[in-house]
Image (cartoon, rainbow over all chains, first blue to last red; front, side, top):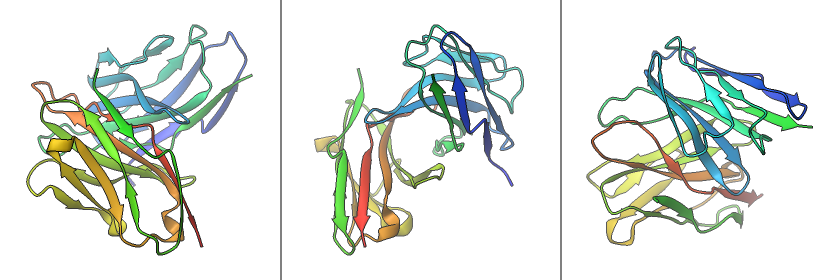
Length: 114
Length: 116
């Protein structure tokens, strides 16, 4: 069953701690994305990667870091520098074929900073 | 900066009522337009999309949307809602340019509550 798997589903963290959210896809998609979802603000792009070993900052990259060592994996680290990390994080992937730019989303990871 | 605006943040309807959710974007160039839906406890999924051609597009579950280029709008409609349409709805825009990055700009979202 092809799709995007995000883990953990729920995560609690103390202030000052880094935490890494996992995103794995078996769709053979080239591009992957991390969005942050906050009530009343929609989804905002954190980072994206179009190919392995390459990634670009999105609109709200400060306090986050990513890596793309494998095509199927795009983990997101929320660092202690992120001022307001409590949010719902969504990972997505895309096969960038002309006329077929549709993102596929994972189920999300909800991070709460205590 | 480009932005997407959804006019209604929270809509409450009774079953069988008609639905229209507004979406406007600020970008003068060519765009691809999307509506995504997030049912309670489920993945964000595509409801419908517009790339080119007929500006009236039909999606899943009886939803449709109309692209009006002169108004920079892509409003979502459904003639008769059901309780199962209770969800959060997001309008999104992809700017078409030389680089096909796939980045979407999302609106703030509209929470639809349908009363049985």
